[in-house]
Length: 319
Image 1 (cartoon, rainbow, N blue to C red):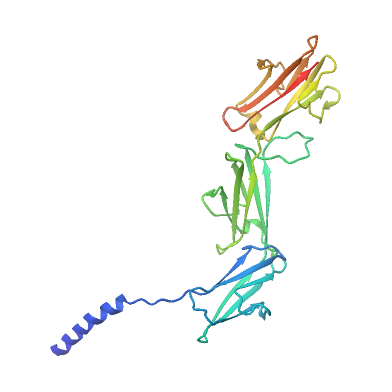
Image 2 (image 1 turned 45 degrees about the horizontal axis):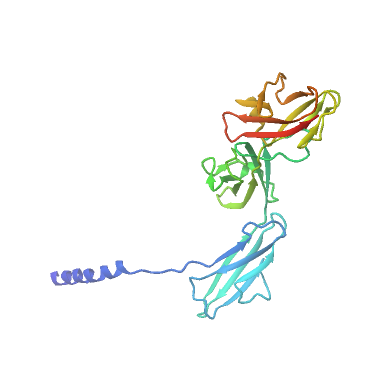
C-alpha cells in the first residue's frame, strides 16, 4: 500500500506543474464596426468585419441584411447599407466560413436615432438684433440634448454623460440630465459632447459639437427722445447735427447678469474719464460746446468679479 501511495505522490509532483503552467488560448469573436457609429434615419452606413484572431486564409464571407443574403459583397470585409426610418432596426450578419469548415457568425443591430442639440447663450444683444446671442469667455450657457428613437421614450428615460473640452461634467452619467449649464472657458472654441445611454447602461447615441466663443463688443446707437433708439449705429465717425445727441452703448455677447453684479461702466472723451449724470449709465448726452472739432468717445464695461467678462468700444464724433 505504501508502494502505491508513493507512486501516486510522484505522479502528482510531475503532473501538477505541467497542468498549472499550460495555457489555453481561445480566440475572440469577430466584430462588426459601423461608420457612422450612430447613424441617422436613411443614412448610408459602412459596416466592417474584424476577425483578425482567426486564420481567414482561404475563408469565404457572406453578408446578410435582415436575413437576406446581399449579392455583390461575397468575400468582402466591408459593406455599405442604407438604414431604415427613425427607430427601425436593421440586422446585419457576417458569416465567415473558414478553410476547415468552421462557420463564424457575427451580428449587429443598427437602430437609427436622432439627437438634437439646442444652444442657449445667456448673453446680451439689443432687442432689435435679429441674430442669435453668442457665448463669450466667462458667460453662462445652457445646452439641451433631445434624443429620439421614434418609440415614445421621453428625455427623462435616458442617462446623459456630458463633457466639456474632454472633461466629464456633473460627476458622470446622470439619468434625466438632458440640460447642461456651465460657464464658458477661455479660448476660441468650446468642445461639447454628450453620450446618451438607455436603461441598460448602453450608449445608444452620442454627439459632439464645437461652439465658437465670441469676443464681447460695444456698438453705439443714437437714442432720440421722440423716435427712440435707432437701429443704425453711429459707425466709426458720427457727425453731430444740432446742439446735442444722446448715444447709447449696447454690449454684445456679455453675460446677461453683468449689470446686476460688481460692474464698472465708464465713459471717456479723448482719453479722459467723464462723469455721466444719467441714471442709465449706458446712455450719455453729448453736446456741441461751440466751434468745430473731432472727439474720441469711449465706453468701457467690465465685471470686476469676473475678469473674462469685459468690453471696450469707441467712435469719433465731429461737429
